[in-house]
Image (cartoon, rainbow over all chains, first blue to last red):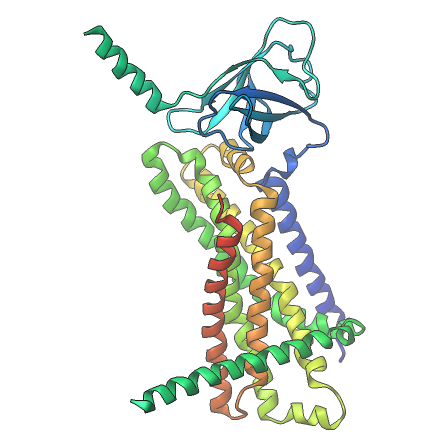
Length: 154
Length: 260
């Protein structure tokens, strides 16, 4: 069967447009452009309660996003949640006595980890563990405490 | 009473028989793929009629679907003051669901019906038996290039549909409704995961491309070789493809996104 040159060119253009669309989805729409797992370093922190923190939640310091939560595990000895965070390697001068707390973005927003810089001269390195942590605020517990303290005052 | 059971049994058996014939036919297609790959020109001309000719339909539909999503999403999201999430909503619904599903439905109507009518008419005019007389395998020569062309074109078309839809949503959201441009893209990039969303959408479109072209070429090849038979086969292609796409979409969605 004879296939004319113009048909082959048009098919080639069609496939090329498909690749361009895929590239657009990968780079402009999804998180592939910010994908630098190789260059980050991991730190850990244990929390008494992580609320509804999810894997891939952002980690920020002073409101600037510096990494992501990469894993959540349960320590069956201390009964605490172990959260693994991957921090981008360009943020490598974070004091080792920094504290981590689980915060909520807005009233209904998702939960994220906020780091508070400490005063230590040493920096966090791969595998280091944050000692000072603050658990997530669980609304039911706060309401419970409020009702309880009201009863006690009477 | 027994007559009802008999008719039920007869229709079930005929469904099973068609399924069996379709599977054998599919196995024949798979066996003849190597003979098409050594003559890729057959594939190129079919890519043109199956894929390229569906291009304008996919682009225009994708643009309008994206624009409607942005309008409707804005209406609901603005109640919660969450207009910034419009980009996420448009992109997630397009990449995960609407891109593969709507593109596949349009593809079944545009290319699938044409495939069935073409092959059915070749059978009715005895071109297929003529090829067999000349010791040319009609499956390898006619059916497999069309099947492969559909299988390759469908993911390309679905990807174009999603990309154009997101751009259409951008025109409406940022251009008309005045959403912040940076928020539209950055929220999208923060929420849409490449492996989770885009690759899964691509897998869906490959599965839909397979099922639509399989149904289309089988219905054409299996059509009763009369004008009435070809017209019925064409109708069945569109109807069965739509059912298969929507049912498979449910199964795939449950498998891919069911556990989150």
